[in-house]
Length: 553
Image 1 (cartoon, rainbow, N blue to C red):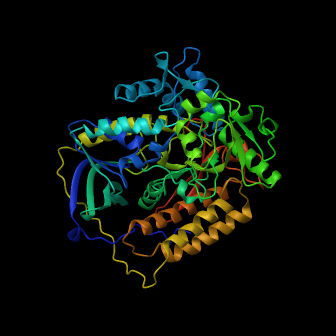
Image 2: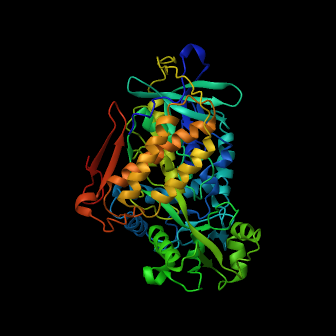
Image 3: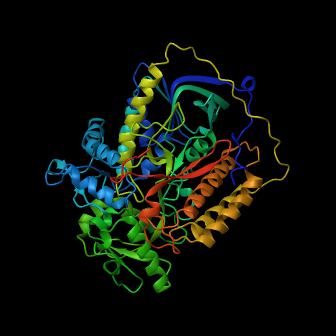
């Protein structure tokens, strides 16, 4: 299964590539990566590498907001219990408590850095989303929180004299030697392939939603960080847990735009093609049930009505409120002749958030020395089997700060050591004479994942997906390619196979992972993490949780 996965995607020799030295290398320019960069001691040099411009991360496109206990009637314990309940037994209570209790301070930091959150009578306006027991979601520009947050954070980052930003630079692989991460090999737009040597490296590459045909994610979300960490030998965990957002704009020919959960928080109703409200039949919380519940209900209703979508209706709400609160969605729908104040919005589920990822501890340390990680590329223990709405930007802020601080301390301890290239080389591989249509393979992969490893899963479809991906891997991963399209496809094949294998092995239904052939949650056998590693012999193992959802290892 993993035999086809090479250690490095490209061949290189130390004497044939330029070298760059830095104290801290941050891979990824989203909220987690830039928060990490801003947490590094100013005496250290930081290089941030992002494969497109800094405003093209998933963070930039986040609509809903950031969850935090800011209302006097709300309590930390309420936010913690909401998070634990949504996670269906796989959250780590110590992680949940840490993140929830840091939330107000991290939100205050963003305000101090110039983020203009929406306010009402001088106070932060708080919204409510599915799974939350209180109004606690801060938002900006109505439904464009990510854009405003990233504007402020990018501006602050560019002001830091010790931080250098390389945009449009693709990170191909992590460099490892003597059991530790030593930096990365990157493809710079002007200088080509460069070996970047770092005292410490922080991985913040975001998610993998583009592995699926239907996705809310921007094109950059191809699972690069997950794949390169796996190739380098870091431990990955919970890769079966892919969150599907229930409401994605569904119009032929349009991009699959996210329709924020905040719309349902404001009172939006889900209707089927016959105009019947159906969510109360599936859950007493109706439209405010957690995302996994709403997603499965929509899929069931689509099947029952033999219709390709359902409809989100806010026409019964005050029109001025709808326009003020959701200007971006109103504009997107207006392009297709839909007035959201009067007409329902056609929606269906789409891949949204990668819950599984590189295993990290409370500091953001991975199992590979010298490598730290934060954000959607990780499995931190916060989300369990189902992420609670608006906890993702919060996780990026908290773990980005922790990873930046911890990596900074580790780098300061080695300042007396000279900088040098490590003896790392990748053997030459002959490029195949056969020209492959990367786009065709990619489309086939994303369709396969949506069809066989999507919202509903079962043994036969998972085994078929695994066999098909294995076949593609055998002739795609051994290609020595020299462009981003090929590297992204190689990463997507690796991540897709990890998701499929973990989904096949977890023979129960829990949170976002739903097995048609194992519809019940089995705490006795499966209240545990699935861990995947690639050493000399790749392995999958179960790791139990303690009774309170804390780590027992």
